[in-house]
Length: 195
Image 1 (cartoon, helix red, strand yellow):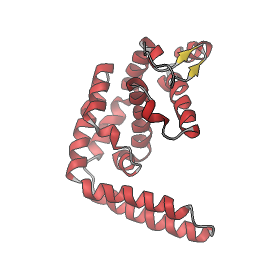
Image 2 (cartoon, one colour; image 1 turned 30 degrees about the horizontal axis):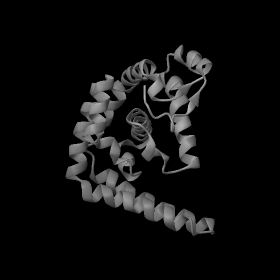
Image 3 (tube, helix red, strand yellow; image 1 turned 60 degrees about the horizontal axis):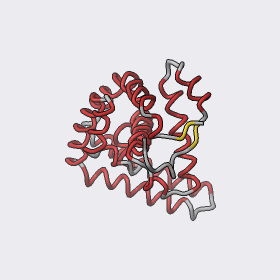
Image 4 (cartoon, helix red, strand yellow; image 1 turned 135 degrees about the vertical axis):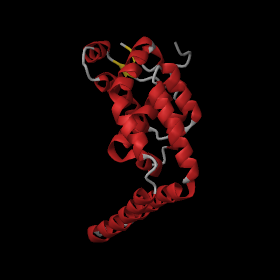
């Protein structure tokens, strides 16, 4: 168990016990990741104090959500390239999620080969967010979003190499997430304080 429990959220044992019975792994994992998001809302830099276990689970949650909703390009545009780092893939291997780790390794190569264009998409999202915070007119905000979405669409149309990896992700995501759930169950004290 971690020596540092300072940034471990408190999760109720009874809630985990019920969620563990579910066939849906996320019913269990959300008890942790939801707490991490709550911590981030209070202090956006708290993630820097997460232990490695928390950081890997949090990153997996982001990877899963982005890939399912918009693919690897969305993951990158959202500024979550930490999910493409070899250390993250290696941690997933240790946790038993080797197929997703392999997909990440391949996605990292595509990312590196298209980095300039993909980072342009990330900059567009940052610029949109900064500009949107200053706009009070909803019509102007909508036009800004449409322009940003058009530019992102060009990136999606230009870089299609991620698509086979996304298909492979969809094929194994439920089984791999169930494996991650088992790992978390076996090491629960690294992810939260259970009361």
